[in-house]
Amino acid sequence: MKILLVYKVDADDLGSSGVVQKMYDQNSAIQRAGHDVELAYLRGNKIIIGESVCTIENTHRKYFIKNIHFFQVLARYTQSHRFDIIYIRYPFSNPYFLHWLAQIGKIHPQCKIVIEVPTFPYHKEFDGFGKISLILDWWYRSFLKKYVDRIVLVGQHDELWGIKTIKITNGINVSRKEIIYSERKEGEIRLVAVGNWKSWHGLDRLISGMGQYYLKHPSVRITLDVIGGGSVVQYYKQQVQQLKLEKYVVFHGEVQHDQLDRFFHSADIGIGTLGNHRIGLTEHSPLKHREYCSYGLPFILSAFDKDFQRDLDFVQYHPSDDSPISCELLLDFYDQTSHIQLSIRNYAIQNLSWEKRMDDIMDMVKD
Image (cartoon, rainbow, N blue to C red; front, side, top):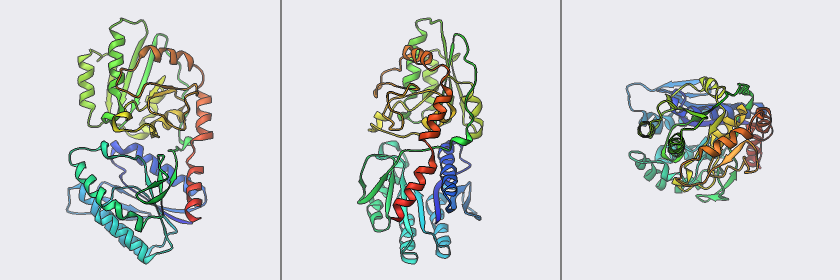
């Protein structure tokens, strides 16, 4: 089958590196399944579709490139290129997006349109200017059922916006990761946390827990490397200063995705998402959990992740509330997860591959 994979994401944006890597992983998985796939995405002021590159001149506003020009260029491209399936990471609905979908239905009625919604509900994730996009989305998404054949949902709804769903969890390309074989340090536990930080990631809970831990003058040193930017990083830094944790918590800012290895390879425990209760989610499927697992790194989390059942020995669940994370529990977890990197890695290989997920989706859509 000939497939167009569409991501309204800027590949040069370090804050979106996780989503960009997912795009490449899905693209590779579809190719390995034997399909002919073209990828559509952004790189700065360039819109890339397959081997075609369109440069948007005389504009400095990313909003117009991502929300208007992107769909206009896609509309021109799909007028002259035929696809069996167009698979779109949901970009929020607006009139330009709907116009493009309507055009596909008119020119290529046999083409199946699939939208992946990576989080639902998502309205609590946005504030400020993002609220305007939400209002537009709320209005225009009611028309999606006229053009969209299926919604791929990282969630539990059988139907969304009047469209049948295919329920999945996120996957990962395990082959591009190298298993961690670093030696543990006597008397020290090294934590790593990666994200484009928002309030619902809940890292403040861990920082609070570390503050309580160090008031007891412990013998085991716990350190935390924080990777990535985001709207709450400054708040986290202030929290670290207030709790006098500057010797133990280091903020590294945004780094290239391929530079994450050195942080993972010097870590003992990964920090998953700890605040999804703040946006009303009781179940989720974060990419970072799959990243940790593919490296062979044990990790902690709070809200339920279906791919990581509570009885697995390399995950530790904490309460889905605002209580500080217990560092004493982390000490126990550390002791229980020695020399299990290979079994964690094997779990990722057996359970988290994108190949099976994407091939099943394509088969279900065509049927």
